Length: 254
Image (tube, rainbow, N blue to C red; front, side, top):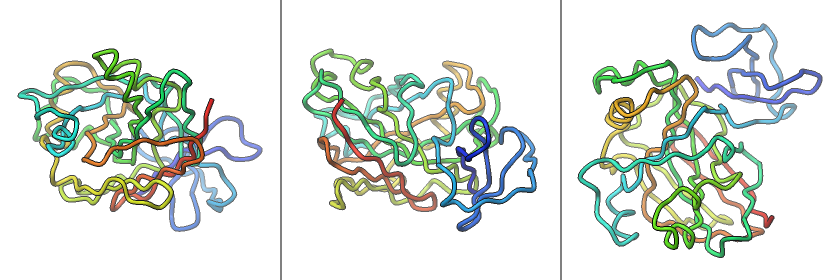
């Protein structure tokens, strides 16, 4: 099942719906619990897809693909390395990634994103699936020159628009073997597979939940495969994950 968050003409505020082909059936309220259909279906072409959630926080896992760790000149850490992006970085499918004037070397990073369904803490790995609503595509946009200059990652990854997610949440998905890619202007830059994750989705959900309480709608980015590279104004960046779909964003200068 695909759950989208949309803007609908003549309806105040975002609403959620279930995507079925070229239609979307609206829901009453939010999807974090039993779904309550509103009995209204619209054409997808008549609505604006928003980011599927607006999380309280985005927790990102660094160096979770060995090939990406190697291309960055490092190794997979003995323990997971995590960092947080503010929710002001979040944009949806079709929204513009805005390049800040402080950076001259902004990179794309295609990632599988996990959306949390329930408030949880200290989750066992075997039960991690119980607190996952579903999965979506993400782009952990990074100002690489600022990351190197600062010696830590917060500024480089926290500019507004630096976390596109979407186009929707897929609730029924086996994440153990999914092709994940990033195209820039139809040129393949990243071509990986989630089978190469160092630590699995369930392992990361469980581990992060021992560090901080996770809330419904929180998003976990699981890491990026090798092939990260610069994006510039005028580019169009697409992240595609098998079983989910494609997230596409234009790139503009501020």
